[in-house]
Image 1 (cartoon, rainbow, N blue to C red):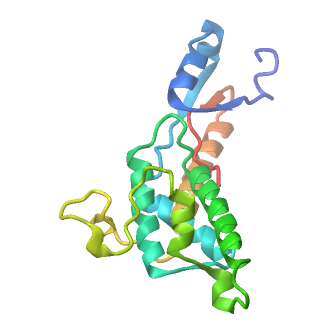
Image 2: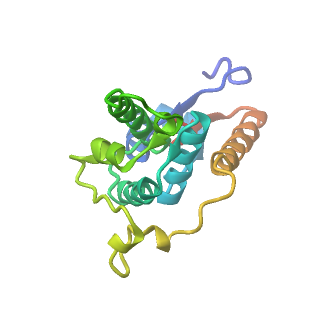
Length: 196
């Protein structure tokens, strides 16, 4: 690294605690990595924005009661996140499970309509989250006053579903470019959220 420091950039990425252990595992690493970029976890509303973006991109729609349920569940996912929480990757994995659940349900319909072929229903939500431990709320009436999982307490979803991911990606790229144009620096990205 020292011999080629003008031509060499090293980027390492991972979860905060593990990256801290990695950097501190060797004094030589700690002295060579001096730029850090931290990305906070997506909140429940942002996870929902990612989910809606995946629906739109793949030309699916969602029943109203399923929409309410998914908003609530993604808030519960965020509130109960642990070291294995994957942000956008978690949402993508759920989306793939929805596609499987939807397909399994549709093959049982003798003459599915066009709507059947693209609509994620509450049955699909139940199939995906049946054993998850998350509460499945199907309407706003299912919430008790002050319930943190109540989507009514969230900020309104943004108009453009991709706006969240685009804004975060732009900031990420600005930080990377800034780090790369400054000579003689190695870069550590402490936690990346670009796992969509």
